[in-house]
Image (cartoon, rainbow, N blue to C red; front, side, top):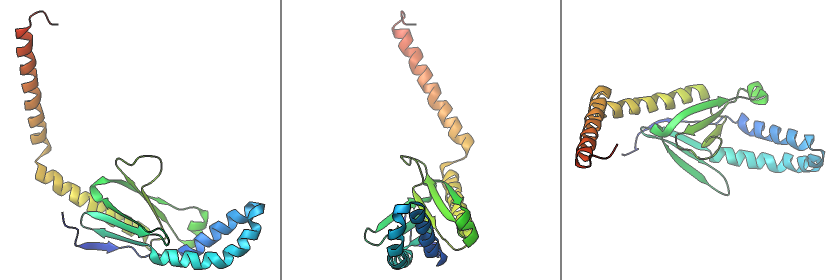
Length: 179
């Protein structure tokens, strides 16, 4: 299926870099050993977080959610919408104070704990989440309509089960001593 049409593109809030800086500084300062590293992080972290944020991208197409991020190691994922089971919104106390959300994409068949993709700092995250879930529901509805009605699918299953029953009866007739 072609994925040419982009429905929505996520924009990432510049405050996300500040959130990452602040979160890392808190962890470094809580671990007393990390305090000297915190001084270095103030300079290196600012450059790192801004570059990382500039490389983040997320686009909703007609059939997929495409995500790209990373500086040294670039990760690009294409998630089929029909595989998405949920998109959770997470907001810790620092994120709440800054008006940021983290969207986690959970899919059917994901091995291991946690989400397949986590996206922090999408502008209007609740709106983007609803667009993704609405498009997922749209294509799921189109596929179920093209597959036929649920009652027609149930009737075909019943017909197959009837054929299996009849085959088992014929087998029992050939071997009368079987239970």
